[in-house]
Length: 163
Image (tube, rainbow, N blue to C red; front, top):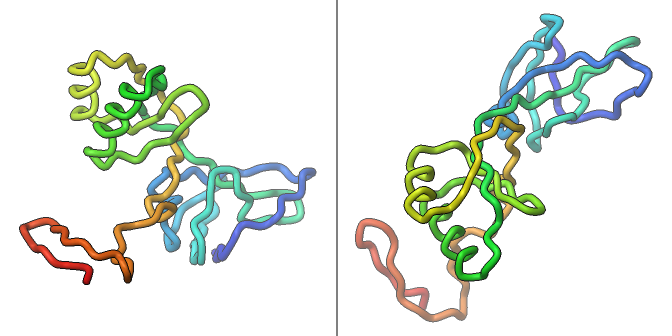
């Protein structure tokens, strides 16, 4: 069984063999799966891979990751800043990952979000598509920065000062 440690360059003359994975597998650094031809693969990665990455080659074949499409909601971007802010707040309040496109947002199909969008009279379509929001770790997290002096609270009533 090949052990994949990173993506490699694909030979364009080789026949592609797909390794079907969902987006949750693509977020991992350690997992196992099978290619369409039945070949087993183990993944031991420093950095997660993405849809379309070539991970193994033979003389005639290139094994390529193919992310499976999933049900998502496609929400057109609001035209006014207040509407955009309200939509962003609602989605963020549910801690939903978002794939930001040129003219719309893709969000995982979630019943709670559907109810909120309907309540706000926001139009959306339910579609099946490859959903690849950026990882949560791509954005700065809550940090305590020396020199910023303010009191704030966390969940469950715990409070502290950054002083």
